[in-house]
Length: 244
Image 1: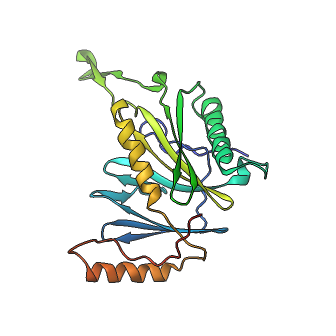
Image 2 (image 1 turned 90 degrees about the horizontal axis):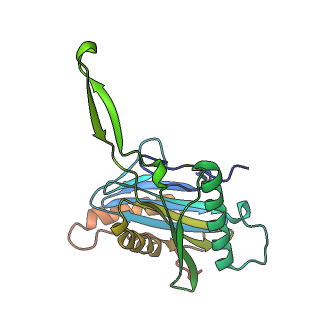
């Protein structure tokens, strides 16, 4: 089975090795962004994506957050890790290796420079933050074009928009699924802020032991919009929060 989908390869660049798993994902527009509801297997959660400028990228499962592509995705662990005795931390490493192996051998066909760092979120939930640098050879900086009439053409060198510096990911485990978020760092100096952004967004996930009712979430959003506009505009989304 092909282990991946190219999300924003090259020009907008955000990559993951997993084919999209749309089952159970519902996206609802809120006053301050979008609320993602996900019910898949034993994994149930809501996630509120908020930003001054956030929109859905047409015909994709991606968001545009302040001009950068961003996604949240679920990957069944059985797709990349077969040993039931693996710890959650080891499973996160298995996924990292699986993604990088596919990206380097199949998608980009070049060795990738990577970096990863382990974190632990509230409730002792292991988390892995990692990135790879976009290969320099894929970064066309200048293209020569010819303009004007055929007998008076002038060659013009135009600098193309460079590829992002790095693809950035954060992953964690919930039951039999891996939860993944990813976006890009346009420049090297953007890496710390991008990692902090992903950590902050992952912490916003509200897990539930039971399947989440989209109608209840919609009602909470409507009530929040009608009630608020003065203090916190985040809807009081009903979930049964759990640590793991």
